[in-house]
Amino acid sequence: MKYLSGNTRGKIFLLFFRTSSFFSKNVFLKLIGFPVRLFYNFFFQWIVGTDIYDTTSVGRCFNVYHGHSLVINKATKIGDNVIVRHNTTIGVGKKGGGSPVIGNNVEIGANVVIIGNIKIGNNVVIAAGSVVIKDVPPNSVVSGNPATFLKFLK
Amino acid sequence: MKYLSGNTRGKIFLLFFRTSSFFSKNVFLKLIGFPVRLFYNFFFQWIVGTDIYDTTSVGRCFNVYHGHSLVINKATKIGDNVIVRHNTTIGVGKKGGGSPVIGNNVEIGANVVIIGNIKIGNNVVIAAGSVVIKDVPPNSVVSGNPATFLKFLK
Amino acid sequence: MKYLSGNTRGKIFLLFFRTSSFFSKNVFLKLIGFPVRLFYNFFFQWIVGTDIYDTTSVGRCFNVYHGHSLVINKATKIGDNVIVRHNTTIGVGKKGGGSPVIGNNVEIGANVVIIGNIKIGNNVVIAAGSVVIKDVPPNSVVSGNPATFLKFLK
Image (cartoon, rainbow over all chains, first blue to last red; front, side, top):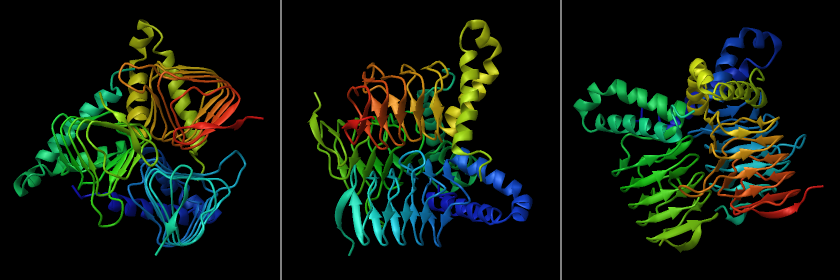
């Protein structure tokens, strides 16, 4: 049944994420947008399990596929054209540590962990199931636990 | 509390999955089964997070344990007596690529990824946390990331 | 938005977990606590996906961060000051097998699998993405799939 496919669901999520983000921009907007933000927080971050703060820095053309149990720390910086999936964690490695900076055109597979004060370059593919704890150079594919260089992206 | 244990929940899921599948078989059934399928799609695929299309080809005696954040691509073919768990992804490796074909008597552990145009033989155990990206021969146990042959199943 | 952050959510979860646990202690409490336990079971174990039985043996100062798709077998024994996160499985390795015993001061990262009749010592850190299938000695950090000794905890 395709009424609400993994991709459609992602688009609905993004609609609410962008709306909720808009209402986080200043005190006045926070005041009038309170119900929207509370709904977003409860329904998406709790119930659906796509746990991304509406204040997270996310570039254009962000895509979420499925998105169950997707947890992204709010200090993470995400570039343009980034795809994320489900069962994924992007966050700090230790208390008070930094969060990843993710470049443009990055595709992240399902069941991935990306943690620590690291930098994911532009044009990168992170294979499903990878655990990324080091910088990833641009134009590359990484995989494994811990994730290692697999090949350059053609 | 065992009112709705991981296994009971799986059985309730399967009841709705099979019912929803039945109503996907032709245009007439789709018409009268619309509310059931919409409920299945919204409640199980979104809220509970057991994200399996009701049109997926699934054999007899399918079992889902827990089933949170379980995403199975609808082109996947699943044989008889297959057990799946939670935090698991079964799908395509790249856009437009094929989805796995899973044999009979296959037990899949928690937090597993199985992707690509691959074939999982009959009588196979895939250990928890495995990332399977290659064919798995019959009567074997595989584990690891990427998953490798561990032993033959006695 | 921080109305219900990953940590606040964990605290709300724990409030219900401890309350539900209290009502599981004897037949009389079970009788009057039935609605609380049913709510806990349905809302947290199904909908939110923090799937921990209220009869699980859990020490003081238990902490759950995020907690989506966190499945802990009810035979598991958890010590004091234990932190668990999301996308994590703690349970039996095979049908009828034992469940892990987890010591005090143990921090478990996201997307972790800990299975089998094993013992996790005191003062242990299990890195995100680890698959732990063997005993972990006290005062150590483990990581990888399968998880291996990384270093001693200072």
